[in-house]
Length: 421
Image 1 (tube, rainbow, N blue to C red):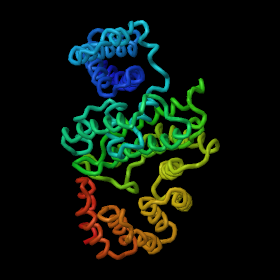
Image 2 (image 1 turned 45 degrees about the vertical axis):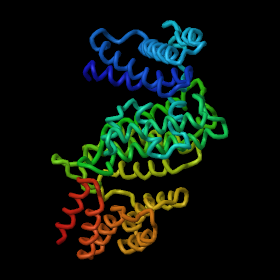
Image 3 (image 1 turned 90 degrees about the vertical axis):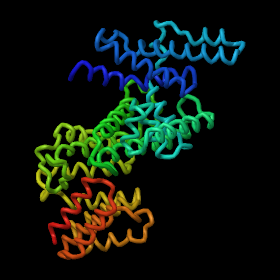
Image 4 (image 1 turned 45 degrees about the horizontal axis):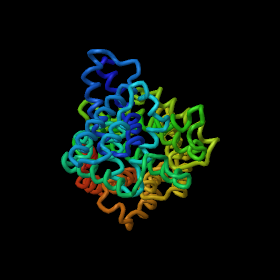
């Protein structure tokens, strides 16, 4: 890794901690974020040339604090507030005390704030990637294929919405923590999914989004499992954090084998499993094995268990489909939704035959949530092909190709249709 990449990784790790420290002290999201971004820019320019300071986090907090001071001075001059001198004195914190501003759970608290239930899911994702992930507004806009001004407005509205709720930079009350953690995990899950199978555009996956989702989930897991026990008991006992991290690792382990040299999609059954990341698989299995006996089972753990069964099969034909079907049946009872039913239908087909899978798939025809979703005709095409109904399979593949906005998926579905013509 080059020195510049080392600095970039360090700054990304420290950014939410520094932002959290400033917000907790000053309570002004926009101004604090601007100050932190300026400090990060200074560090990105100076550290590769001059070396990383002995206390990089304290350095960043000190520099960001000075930017806040400049902001307060300017604002005070404009508004001529009588308390400007007192406020300025409070803002000016000596460099030696900068490290003491950081609380261990600042990153977690910032995640909880960005995933405030008053925000829509798209706003939660955007704000998390901006404030916690350290991605630029332009990068987030590119990831979700919207104009940068549109994404900037979304992020700005999210901050204003949080401000309007009167939220402060503290962990939510005990009664809300478990529910808020579910929102945090859902946001990280959505970020990972968008990165792993990008919903639209020329690329099958976005490595920057999957990497960021894994990094942030790993940070949450670490914060909730630190040996000092500083995290609330109700959160430390949540095995779904480990389950989500395991799911991401076990799924992302296949990424290198999912596309050919030309970027074409390669389905799971045809992938070169020697290209799978054995270290990531082992880490995911270990997380899952450790968490399952210690907590109530949840949807992320079950999905991770399904991913583990796939990953541990040396060949596609060695996959333990009866075990996968049993896990999907449990998941369908615990977390019923159309995507679970869709995947469950494939498992049913592999165990009981394609016609049984198609019968299960018919349950989704009246589900408005699947209207216009390309995955339904894509899976139906696959099961019809398994059943030997080539004409119907071809029609469904082509219908799915027309619906998807992902160029690699469209090309794959068109190719499948042509192959059975």
